[in-house]
Amino acid sequence: MRVILMGPPGAGKGTQADLLINKLGILHISTGDMFRKALKEKTSLGLEAKKYMDAGELVPDNVTVGIVKERLAEPDCKKGFLLDGFPRTIPQADALENTIKELGAGLDKVINIAVDRDVLVQRLTGRRVCKECGATYHVMFNPPKAKDVCDDCGGGLYQRSDDTVETVNNRLLVYEEQTAPLIDYYRKKDLLLEVNGDQEVEQVTNDILRALGRVKA
Ligand code: ADP
Ligand code: AMP
Image (cartoon, rainbow, N blue to C red; front, side):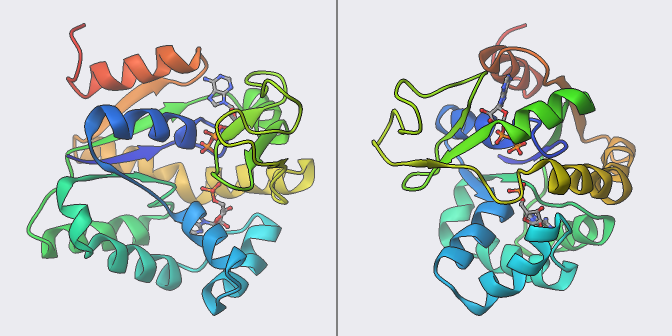
């Protein structure tokens, strides 16, 4: 199964992807995670991406499409994948369509997780991430058992540098201008499934599985 998980920053894509990949037996591919890993390793890709990420802007299409194309050509992607944070522009979506075609496959579904702007700001500014394993928490909605310590691995939690109020405002603007048009793009291709993301995490997961035909209504 090849699925795109779409939605504005803070919609819950990463949270849902972590839960869905086990149930669906497919890979989680997040371009944001790929850029953050490259930055941690101080590669030239990471240092290039940092300029855009810090400003809440998108990394140029040619760079982003290049890393996704390479990743999707790896053998483990044959079992299927869930894309999180890609595509974010129409040229990225066109490039993805060609890449998947070249691999002799097709896209199954696109899930759009919808959440109102004020909730997104609250979610993003309260997000905390584990330095070691990448698990995601929220200071109010999903706090760890011990402050700033990961429940899963005991690693320290940090706030992403692009989760500040100023950068969040720009990221949401960039989303509206460059990424929201993809909703219509995929609706016209008859691939779009819409899910209300302003519900308990478990309810959102159930709605996605139901939309994908993986549980009974
Ligand atoms: P995205 O990957 O779309 O940017 P995340 O999955 O990282 O979003 O979620 C953003 C923040 O909102 C995190 O702090 C996460 O714990 C929290 N969150 C995710 N889903 C929900 C939900 N359904 N209800 C409340 N908080 C949520
Ligand atoms: P995310 O983790 O999905 O919130 O992404 C964090 C940041 O990485 C974004 O604000 C962009 O700067 C960059 N990024 C992630 N995915 C893409 C993409 N598909 N296109 C361009 N930039 C991206």
